[in-house]
Every structure is written in structure tokens, then in C-alpha cells.
Amino acid sequence: MQEHNFILTDVMKTGNHQQLESFINFSDLEGQQFDMTGEWYTLHQYDLKKYTRRIALIDHKAVNSRAWKNEYYWRDLNERTEQLQQLGFVFVIANPWESHSNIKKLHALSINKNCYYWCGESSWFWWMMYDRYKKKTFDINHSSKKYDFLYLNKYPRAHRVKMFKKLESAGLLNNSLYSFLSENKRLSSNYELPWVDADNYPIYGMDQDIYELPYNHSAYNIVPETHDSGETFITEKIWKPILMQQIFVVHGKRHYLKDLRDLGFQTFNNTFDESYDQEENNDKRMDKIADLCQWLKDQDALRLYSVTEDIRKHNASHFFNESALRKTVNETVLRLLEFFDGSQVPS
Image (cartoon, rainbow, N blue to C red; front, side, top):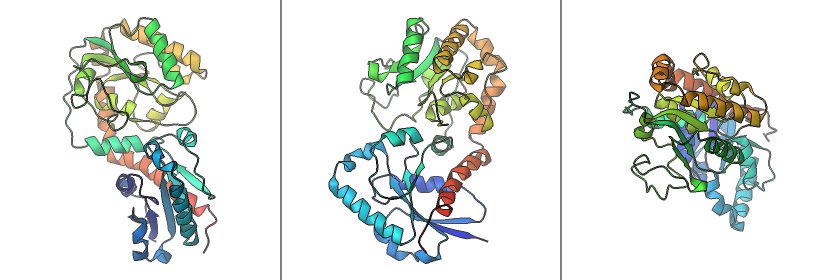
């Protein structure tokens, strides 16, 4: 039997509801149909009583924090959520561009409602990069390696700063392409995105962009993920080297590589030591990553590219496997529906 679900995809019209709708429409949960609108003022056009579930998404991206300083925003938000609750809606704080812990650090929403937090998990950035590059042909050429590592940092998260200083002080970055914008360390203009000002990389909007040259000229990618502990949150930082068929080392949480393998990707555990992924202690994990980077630096990079060719090609191909991606998207969308089913919704 078909169940009909209605989603108001942006209660306050402050976000990117079209992208959220595209993500939900990519799912193919059996027996589920979705009607959606991002327009509060069009609700009167829908017979809401016919829907099995009614869900309202409240945008919570940090870029829209300017609105949170306005008292009228909170007045209007509370008025709308009161009306929506009477109509049988449940509420989802939507910021899949961030992790759950990062959303919690943002401005606390002062609405007296039980809410579900839609965060990035493993599905959002995979889907977003898939949607962006599914028709793109990249110029990939790993036949010449001028540099050891490509290591791109922007926000100064504590674990990133610590890892960066460890690698830098050990001399492991001496022949590498790297950036750390908060430390005013920038890529050479030859390797920066050609469509941006190399001296003024934007805070938002370009992190998912890919320029092939630095990937082609560097042997290994050091991936500085958003977290080194806690939940699974897989971002564009890993998808870029996977798309570019580059060997990678991940500075992330314990079992990050295991999580990738659970999604159907392969890592390099049969080629070099990936035991850092099982290390519980964050500092010891960084030590193991530094040791691995030293080992990689001493290797014949072209030989490693030869022996890892099947892995790298599998990962790039699997990235575009719609059924694999749809499975994880389905899991995210199903959690939204389960939140409704577990809530006390007025009849």
C-alpha cells in the first residue's frame, strides 16, 4: 500500500529547499510517496489530512545565523511551528552540511518542540558530489608525481591544527602541496582553483570544487576530516581523492576507513599499514598517521599507483553506483519517517 508523505522543506525560507527536495526524491523507499513545498504560503493548496505523515524542515545552516539575531525571526518561527503542530506536523532541524555535534554547537533553536536533527552522516556529501559530477569527465593522470602530499585545511579545528603541526615539524610537508587558511598558508596560485582568487579563498561555496592538477601532481592525499572522534560524518574531503583516483590517508575518527568499506569502497589495507584506523587514542592515531606518511614519502609512488590501480578504479566507479548511493540515502530518509512515527502527533 502506498503511503503519502508531505514535507514543508523550509519553514522560514532561509535555506536551500530545492537541494533537500532533490535528495529526498533520489530515494526509492518502497511504498512511500512524497509531496513537498518550500513555500509556507502555499500550504492552503494541499489537503493535509490525506497524508500519512507531515514533516516540517527548519533550516539551520550556519550561513543563515544572521537571521537568528533578529527577534522577529523567532517570533515568526514560533508562530508558524505552533500552527504546524496543530496541523499534525513534526519538526526536523535540517543542516545535512554539518555533523550532529556541529549543529548542536550552533545557535540553539528556542522553540518548545521535540525536534529531529538531520545531519550529514555518510549520505549527504556522497549524494551532493554524485549529483554535481555524474556527467563530468575528469582529466586524471598519475604518471608523474612532483610532490608527496596534497593536504588541504581550512577551518582550524583542534585536531587539524595538532596534526598539521606534527607533520610540518617532522618535515613531512617539505615537498608537498598544502594549505591551512587559518594559518595563512595557501596553495600556490598554479594549483589553486583557477576560478577563485588564490589570495582570498571564499569561506563558503567552493569546498566541493575540484581542479585536477594538484591531484595529478601529488602522490598521496592526507584527508583532514571534520572530526577525529564521535559520529560517522563523511564529507567531500574524502570524495575528492576518490573521484580523482588518488591514494589517501584519512585523519578522522576511529573506524572511518571501516565505515567506508561498509559502504562498499575499498581502502589500502593490503598495500600499507592502515592500523591507525583501529587506534582508540586520538594522539596515538596521529602518531601512526605521521609514521605512515613517512613510510609513504620513502616509497616509489609510481609503483604504489601500479599495485593500487584496481582499488582506485573500483572506488571511482563505486562512487557513481546509484544503487549503492540510493541505499544510504534511503536510510537517511527512513529516519525522518521513523521520527514522525515515534512522535506524539495530534490527530
